[in-house]
Image 1 (tube, rainbow over the protein chains, first blue to last red):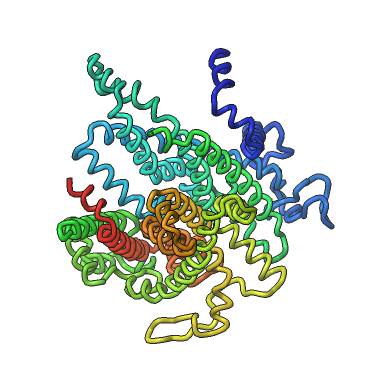
Image 2: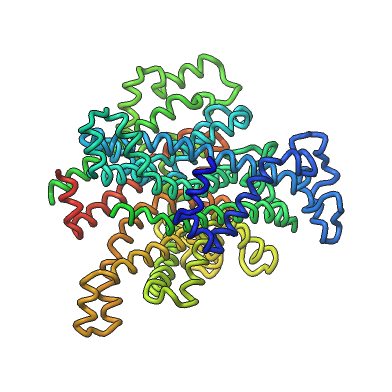
Length: 306
Length: 324
C-alpha cells in the first residue's frame, strides 16, 4: 500500500494535480462535501426524518441573518418546519449515493458490453452499437423520465416513494450505459491491435482472461475520465427527476425534491428553501465537473491511443 | 449511397416498431381504461359492454395489430381526461413546445457560434477564458434551477417579466402562436433562455474544440502559407469543417432538448407537450402518455434519420464505414 502511494506521488498525474489550483480546490470541496454527507447523523443539528422535528408552527423561518430568523435554524426552515441545513445535508447524502451507485451500475453494464463488442466484433458488436445509438438518440434523461413516469403510473405514488432509491439507481444506470459501452469499445479496438495482446494470445490465455486482465487495465484512463463526468450527470438526472416529482418524495428529500418543494414558496418570498439546496447542488456538480475536466486534460485519453 | 439511405430508413422503421411495441405494452398493462372512462357508478354489465366495445376482450395479438393499424392512421387512442382523441390533444399543444424549442435553438446558434469561434481563435485571451469558465459553470447548473432563479429575479423581485403561461396568442390556421403579440414574446423570454442554458455551454465547448482541431490541420497551415487573409481562413476554410460534427451533435441533442422542455415547461406552466406529459403522469392518463411517447419518438427518429443521411451525403467516410 505504501509502495503504491509512493509510486502515485511520483506519477505525472499527481505532479499535474499539485500545479493545478482549480483541481486542488474542487477536490478539497468534494472531500469536504462527502465527509459532511456521510457523517450526516453526527453533524446535522436535527434529524429531518424524525417526525418530532416537523412542526408547521416553525415553517418558513428565514435564515439567521434576516429579520425573523432565529439562532436555532442557521439557514432557516422549509415549508414543513424542518431545519433546512439538516435536511440539505441528508438530501445531499441521498443525491451522492444515488449518483455513485447509478454510475457503478452503468459502468458494469457498459464495460461488459463494450469489452465483448470491441473484442469479438462482428454481429454482436453491430447489434449492441446500434442499440446504443438508438438509445442515445433518445437521450438518457428522456428515457429516465419516461420510465419513471410509467412506473409511477403503474404502482401508484405511495408505493413508488418506498422503492424510490433503488429504482432511481436502476433507471439512471440503465439510461446511461451507452456512453460507457462506446468509450470502452473504442479503447478496446485500439488496444486489441497492440503486441501485448497478441503475445497473451500466443501464450495461450483465454479470451476471458485477455479481456479482463490485459485489455481492461489499459482502458482505465478513459473510463476514469468518463466516470467523473457521469457522476455529475447522474446527480443532475436524479435532481431533474426529483424536481418533476418522479424521484425522491418530500418526506425523504434529495436536493432535487427540496428545490421542487421550495419552488412553490418563492412567490411568497421564501427564496431560501429553493436557493440553498440549489447552490449546494451546483457546488457539488461543479466540483465534480471541474475535476473531470482536469482528469481529461491530465490523462488525455485520446493522446494515449497514439 | 442509395443503399445507405435505404438501410437508414429501414432502421428508422425498426425503431418506430420497437417504440410502438413499448407503447402497446404500457397501454396493455398499466391502468384499466374502462374504469378511467366510467368511474364508479356504472353497473357490471355496462362495464362489460364497454370492454367488449373497446376490444379489450380480444386476444393480445389482435389488440396489438389493431393498435398498430390505428397508430398508422394517426389514431393514438382516447385521452381519459380530455375525453378527446389523444392525437388531437398532442397536436393542439405541440405548437407551444415547437415555438419554445425554435426560439431557444436560435439563441443557441446566434450565441454559441461567435463565442466558440472566438474562444478557438484566441484561446489565451481573457474573454475566452471567461467564456470557457462560464460554460463549465453553465453546464453544472440544472435547467430548472436557472428557470427558478429567472422567475425569482425577473418576475417576483423586479416584476419585469411574466412568470408563467404563454400570454396572448393568435390563432393562425389552427396553430396558436405567441410570435405575433408583444405579450407572447415577453412570455417567451424566460422559458427560452432557460431552455437554451443547458445546450449553449455544450455547443460553445464543442465548437471551440472542433475549431481548434481544424486550425491545427495541414490544409489551414497551407492556407496561411499561401498568404490568404485571416478572415477568409477562419470563416471560409476552417469554419466549414467545424460545422460538420456540430450538425451531427445537434441532431442528437434534440432528444435532450425535448427532455428539457419537460423541465422548463413545468417551471413556467408553459402549455406545451412537456406540461401535458407531466399532467398525464399525475392523472395516470395512460393513453396520453403513450401518445406522447409515439409522437416524440417519431420526431426524434425522423430528425436523427435525416441528420444521418445528410451527414452521409456530406461525409462519404460514414457511408463506407457502414457498408463493411
